[in-house]
Image (cartoon, rainbow, N blue to C red):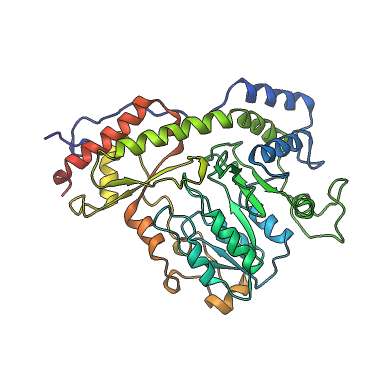
Length: 413
């Protein structure tokens, strides 16, 4: 019996994995060019490199328009405001994601309605969505999660039937395609993040994509302090927006990141498929199978499932602690249900539109999403994005660490 590193044995791996974020001379030269130009800001908006990046990024994903913004949270608020979502309107969201997805409607005094995810891929369950629609429902925000995409065919059917707006939360899904259509180009809007953990990053930043001209103009205005400039001034009246611009320094970095997106996306997808095949060797660990309609996998995080019964009753988090000691740090409660997060401190005193549905605050004890809860606390294991940018030997070490712990579960009792 091989002694687990958690109990004093020799770990499988002691070397670090691939560094993140990645950059090369393209980012270095672009940053220097912006620095020397003395044109660093987000104003005028869109500025030169921000315009270039928005145009190229949207075109890559098959959308007609792209609007740069300060992050991938306000991007959803911009989209909701652009379509006229008002106080008290309902927006359907999944709970198994980052709090920003539900925070976007809250911040414009709309009401998030939590609908559980599918056990197949942890993305929004379309059949539960239709049952949750009320006369107040105005929008759906499906989240493309990990390396999976929500069922956009069914969700768009439901949205058309009920005259709803669909905002794809693509924070995990740069470079992914569904039946040949890019993430963020299938719904009425796409929302992307360029925060430091994302597949493309400038430290912070966001993007809204759309193929609707009026929506484009309104989002551009909302992100630029309500200004109406040539190119986005044909709609009536003025909207009240934010300063949600990005700087030219961020746009310069993102142009360099975009140049490598296609190559790196394919590399990660290849690594994800290799892990799926290797995981078949380890009882109790089952990778999520990609929907065959995904024609290019984004692979921000590689998610697989833990079966406690097959693991001799050992809890998932105990198993992961042992794997971490072997030199492979994986995530368990990477996300918990939004309504149970202490960060989602939403009260009717601040956001009065929630009162009718939730009372004084949005508490976990009034919402039941069992698939999300099981994923968060018992089942889901998240492999972080940089691991997929390493070598096959790196992936073999991950499998070796998982297999070693699985084969020595009795030591964890």
